[in-house]
Image (tube, rainbow, N blue to C red; front, top):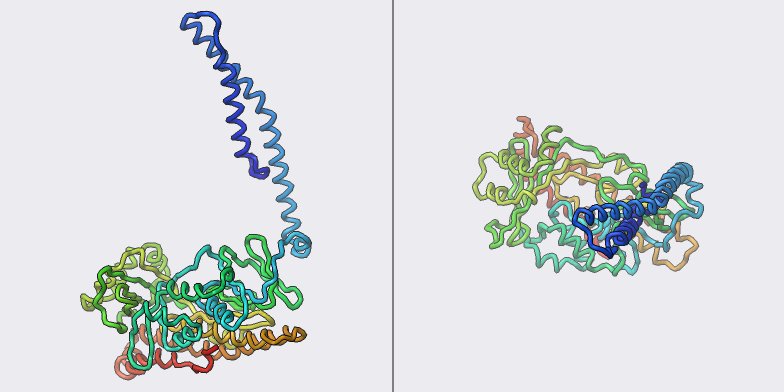
Length: 477
């Protein structure tokens, strides 16, 4: 029967009990006289048939009733669904489950979302983080944390614990470490108050309600909030609501992996980056037991699709692209288990869209990849997301910590606009520089290769450190 009544399993249980009783009534009858074996078997067959016929009569009309009722109920409900739920104004009247209001709702428990929530918490402001997954997601394996990221982590109060887990790559005044993404997310989430992150909460739509926003979730519930922050990544629902287009794909891909050594590895704490053959390959240790590596380059659409579906082919593709490299470098790819290898197409948010688009609108704004997706060539994506969190929290705190409620909406709007203006040019600079750096490093044109190898080698190697040098005054609470 159809599932509309929810009676399929119940009816099956009923069948079992009634069938057993009907059979027991006839099979357990005691015969008062002796019969020959053939006569006894014939009598048992007759009684069994009688019991099953009795069961059939008892269940026929019950089943007929449930099947017909279920079909009719399903037809009526699905017909009404088309009338009710595709007409938003009618659907909202008494049919939506309203939850307790939240002053600040952050969509996405990634780096920018958790950094924003923790920064707000340090400033004494509560927020609610909605995560579509049922656990913290650590896609991406690692991030390179440059000086600007460590200033943010220091301000958030979680830097020391992460330093103990990850060795420094460069010496001197520039602090650079390769962080396991999972360790970073767990450190950010650990210091948040219990209940700040709400898992299995996927946002499906956003609606205006006076000065507030209604955030509708896929479980049918709705949150009403004074401030909505989208930190929900590449396919952001909030970014779409603000009017942004989908990110632009570049025709490039990134293959990443991590090799783990139980007894430790022998790699020195530094970047090894190789450029040539149309790709860029890099190796960097995370700690004494893990070594992260990556390869970026252009693949055909068919080749990219085929490789992404087969991790063993990904590994072989990387080994073939390495060409003549030292056995030490080649070994880190060979030592990587296939389940630790991932491939993703690279895209970016066009700089002009970031420059002139709505990073904030009224009481809604975006941060992290939802705002400024960029290529990994500068290794600044995660660092910029951390910057966003602390700058956004400060701008909101200035608006929310005043006691007067009369002009709070205008103060929130002004605070988010202030955040947008502070981040706009910073994001444009890193997006554009990253795209140009990737093109120069992977280009096989003779003129570009000559410039890269003879004139720009030192400048290009220093560029990531220069771009990490961001105003320290903006990265404190």
